[in-house]
Length: 124
Picture 1 (cartoon, rainbow, N blue to C red):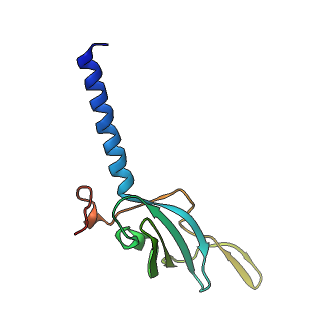
Picture 2: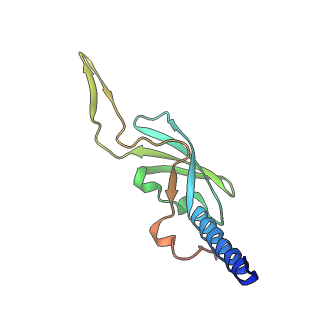
Picture 3: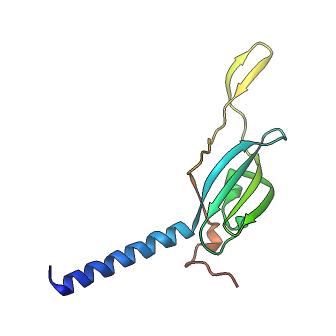
């Protein structure tokens, strides 16, 4: 491989890595999802990279946000009330078992709110 080709290859790889990092900084990863004490609520824990807080992420797509809290500069949690009508999965005399419409699991990504996605997102 010629020197100019090698330099070009290295430059392309650096640009690809910068795009990967930018993408990682524009989303949060779900660490855990647990039922909360109140009916129809759950607690979701998130981790992210970059200069964000938990309110920067599009949590409202999961339901009504009841409470949010940053724990560290790159982690936080939210308590969310489910925003869906409960489909009945199984009915038994005197009871019904509901299934969640959108199952969340650790490792899934939550994007930044659309109003914050321009550029790499620097805080003032």
